[in-house]
Length: 315
Image 1: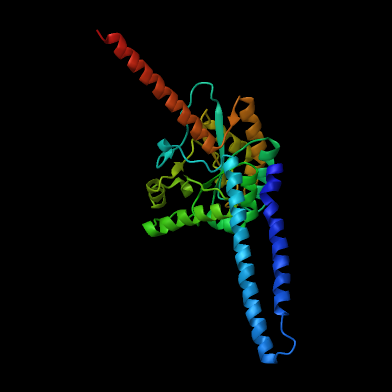
Image 2: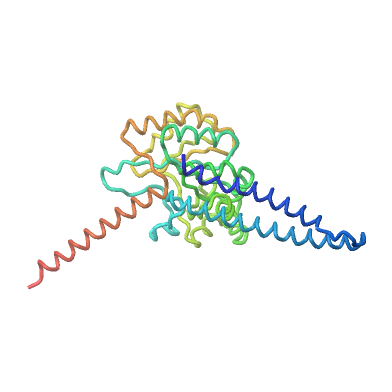
């Protein structure tokens, strides 16, 4: 896609800039007066090398800032870094309350990015024109930044799933690190500033969920669990997904954290079966935006009815 090409063009600039500045540094090192002593020559070389090194570093820092700005613009253009509606800030959401006829479902994947599996999941989603939401582990983002960038450039939403994926009870400082450090590495890698959070294992009482709530993250749970982490057979995994699936629902699956071959095998059938049942696929930000609009519509209708009732009852 054109957007993917524009997203990665700064990398070519970076290579060119490093080459040019490297040549510049070498040239400056050779600018020594012909009649100077060896000591003077060394001092001149050191001085020129220092100036060139500082200049190169400044140019690289400037290029990094430019690349990050472009990533941010790409993320904003794709609607991946929009602000969370106020009603969901600090709230826990397992499904969306929608109007009749809004038959949508949100597929979510946890614990990535992960070698091989994430790329396989992305390939299936792309072939089927489905956008999903990935709740990523910070240390995995650090280790596999290219996979993380691919998730975003292909139009998927991302959420915070802590840095280490720990289950044990954490003090406020540790909980803050787990969440803040993950949000930062997502931002530095992709330009997306996420305010979606999913606690590992769905644990709400070990410190991280409380920190996320207090810092206005939307805490995203699920209404349909594939239980793929227990590695069920493919038919059973599919049955798990559909047992509690309903419009406005959120499906939990995993693209990382272990062997996810059953999830990869089951995913095309899951997508096909949802579509045959009349579902459309949305990301979590899209799902929450739909609920926000629906709730505002209901509020406006109730307000209009109340005003009309007051008018009818007035003498």
